[in-house]
Amino acid sequence: MKLSTTKISPKTLSFGLLLFRLCLGGLMIANHGWMKIVNYEVLKTQFFDFLGLGSQISLILAITAEILCSILLIFGLYTRVVLIPLIITMLVAIGTHGWQIFGEAEMGFLYLLGFVFLFIVGPGDNSIDARMNKRTYF
Image (cartoon, rainbow, N blue to C red; front, side, top):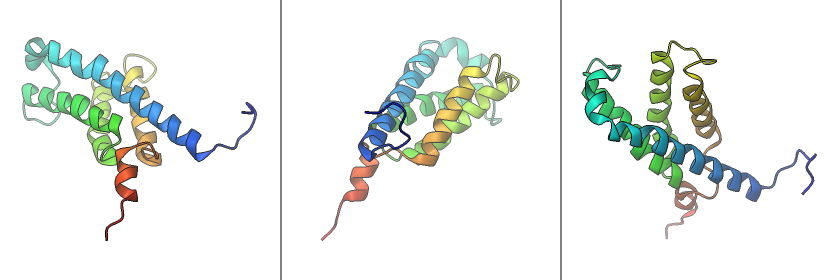
């Protein structure tokens, strides 16, 4: 492999997208979704009410996005669909930190960039989506 080449093989690209999905989804679950579950009792009254449905409902929606959607992202199942709630969740997180992308909202902004990137390029060939699209029906 030449380090200075700009060409990329489809297998390398698919492996990179798989690794990116695993990292983004895994970190979202471990550092954000799971921590919200562990601290649910404290957060249910303090969580930002972004839809006007109450802080507890907003927290449940955020946990669902950060856990369920991240699991589906890891497997590459309905990838672009599950990225929409994750993107919205990151936009809300950035907004609650005053849009300070070079400050408190930096991590949310990095997640947002990753999610938007995957939304644009798709999950790659190492995903359930790719396997489902390759099926032929007789």
